[in-house]
Length: 296
Image (tube, rainbow, N blue to C red):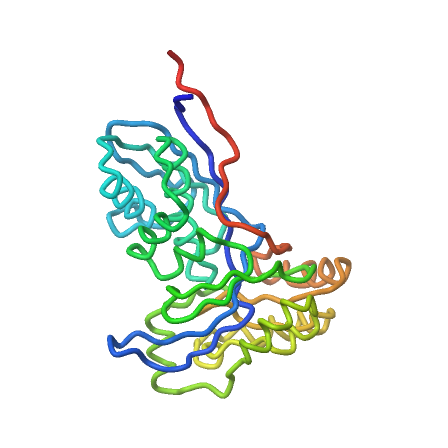
């Protein structure tokens, strides 16, 4: 069936742990992380076209050649050799400069959507190879679920699903620049170094308390996000098993084993923060939810 358009849902991610374990010869930081996709989605609609266009309704994210969605489309057409185009509309729900990989989700969603729209039949390995050239988090954004991720995001190991839980996520009023966060880390270091191996084993054994006990983010101390401690305090006061920043910031989340406690925490945070979410862990990356046939 030739398709006129497809719609894709691409999930955001949280870092259940993030450690900086060294510096690579190329100057990039060597990371060790456990990453988790959640049911907060970017909605991406792709339509057959002769050109290449991107629309971001209601978003202040710039539409230019640096946008990950445009990079993904160009990389897909280059790899496949298809002489085609696409009109892309992305309804952004994931906060920007949050450490939740919204841009990577966009790129992953575009790759998955174009693969389906044009029946290119690329494997997930091929999509990940394309994605790695777009951004460090794109391969994980394609795979989704629960993963141990190392290096600069290029070494991934799929784990069993995260134990059942609820995440309450709050975005502070000011975002964090990833390069600036790592630059501050180089200057300040961090007193926090989570045990990612212990967390992986806790995920494997389905022990949520142990997952949370091994959590932590080495970038949180030097993020410069002033609201993080206050948000973490509210989350813990309402029963979060752990609370921390995700990625390079600035979003903060708590992990709950009780939905009522999670909803109470969400209600406590909403008056002070416009972007607050109650989320669950998901078991995969972007998925096509709507296919519209091309009329003959």
